[in-house]
Structures are given as structure tokens and as C-alpha cells.
Image (cartoon, rainbow, N blue to C red; front, side):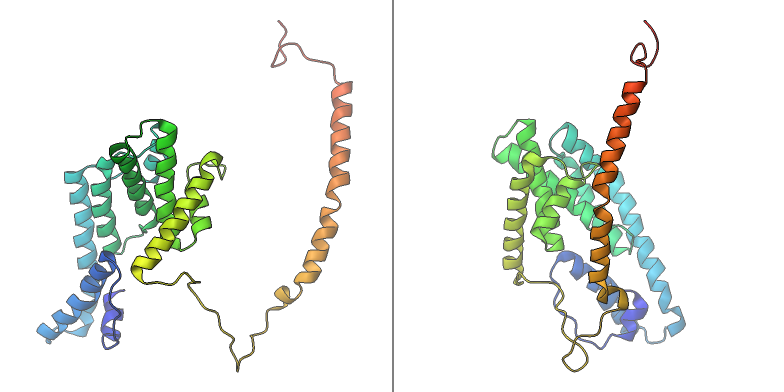
Length: 271
């Protein structure tokens, strides 16, 4: 939350933070600016906005310092490449990713926690598989690494099935791959979600509860939503034309192949 919002809503009660990131966000964007105003009441309100660029530049500098001393943290492309070639993500990139991602999010950068979570959990899962369980095969290592990625996304988004399948999709440009690891990934994501919700004291329930408005009655849907039956009927009518059109195209293709003389060579060159 920006400093301007923090000063406008400084009187509201704050719930206790659930993570280190939320604790730091509350500290640097709520508690410190409020304490600064109380300690120096002579600061004009027209200068309150300076807290945003100053804090952002401070944490942006921390990102560069962490990369300089801890090494390259890697990105999502690097993580995907490691999963394909090695079957695991080297653990040496995890400390730099943790520090740089925390500093970037605290600075208000566009970097979200999804990609860092995937990379960090993939590194931890591969390390546990190799060091604690002595797994050495690339296929088994990849299964454990994908399970760690599925755990990260399932716990973060709160959807075990969608998060687990998304962990398999991000490794390919054409969508869902690594079918042989799907069951393991879904089982790992579901288990992680249950453990995370239990440790955090959260119920396994929808994030938003949509309640009726307007005296207990649902708000009327727009016209396009009310006419979904008509749209579905038209869609079925359009899809019924696909079969005869496909058969006609297949017959035309066969006719053209029979009427066209064969070309010499693979690319039409003789010899």
C-alpha cells in the first residue's frame, strides 16, 4: 500500500501479518511512515509522496546488491531449462532468488511472488530428493521437482488441481506436458494445500463468498448472460456443420492427391 493510502487510513485496525513478506510490507509502508509523521509533525503533507520513490529506490538497490554478492537468481526461463535438461534446479540460486524477490516486491516492483515461489520450491524439492533420499535418475528428479512446483502454485492460488496442472504447463509452449507426472503433481499439490491451510489456520473454502444483493435477491444478469440458452443452441447448430465440411475437405484432398503426379525426391527434386 502506498504511503498516501497509509496516511489516509492510519486509524483503521490492522490484522496480524501471516508471513514475513506481509510483516515487512506493513513495517515499511505503514508503521515507519506513520512513526515518522508522529516523530516529526512539522513535515508538510505535500512532501508525503517522497516516501514512495525513496523506499522504492532503496529496495531496488538491495536487489542489485543481492545479485552482485549472492549471484544470479535465475528466472522462469532458467527454471524451465533446468527442469528439461537436468531434472532439477540447482540450490545455489535459491538464496539470491529469495532476497531479490522479497526486495523487489517490497519496492513495489512488477515482480509477483508466483515465479519466485516456483523457482524456490523447485530448488528445495530437487535438493531434498538428491540429498535426503539419494535420488539420482533424471526422470525421478524431474518428478520430485515438478511436485515442488505444483506445491508452490497449489498453496499460493488455493486450487490444488489448477495449480498442479499449471506447474506442468509452464514447462512447455504447447500447453500440458509431462503426462506421466500428472498424478504425482496433483497429489503433492493437494497435500501441500491441506497442510498449508491447516498450519495457517485457514479453512479450505472459496476465497470470495458471493452473497445476494438488493434485499436478499440476486442482481439481474445482463442481457447476454440471460440469453445463454439461445447462444448454446446456435453453437450446437454451427457445430453440426463441422462434420460434413470436414468430410468434404477430406474427400477433396484425396481427389487432389490422386490427380497430382508424384514428384521425385523428398522436396520435389529428382535423384
